[in-house]
Image (cartoon, rainbow, N blue to C red):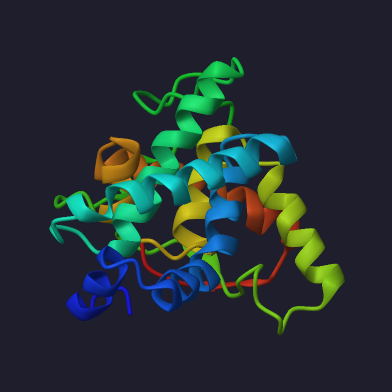
Length: 202
């Protein structure tokens, strides 16, 4: 659906079924991503509504240089960051200053900048219906308790499932910076949730 040029053409033509399919697939994940930037239900609702409106107005200008999913989430991130700044919660990713978590040992990275040993990642998706309500509540609560940078990156990578390239582009950060933030967030979640993790990629 997301990569099919025919589907994009249907969106451009105002096909209601196509919009409903897109909405059904992404409204929940968009809300989850928005919650990592803004903290009130009203702000989340407004950011997501602005995102869908921007898609409707801007679909004619979608050139397909990125996936429809990436484009949609980039709109969301831009709207959410603007709202966070307006609410005096300006989030910056230009440095890791102010993060009280331990620094990652530089020896953990190889000469190519990638992890020598991949950090563990979550084995479950908080949106999954397979999770019990208690476990899902614990996971969502643990993610919500992460520092701003970590909460956003972990949400985009491990909850929404975006790639490192997509997240770096959306947040305008380097791959190395994204790796460190993600590793710190995952490490905090492992400490909070115990063994509910598996080995995964960077």
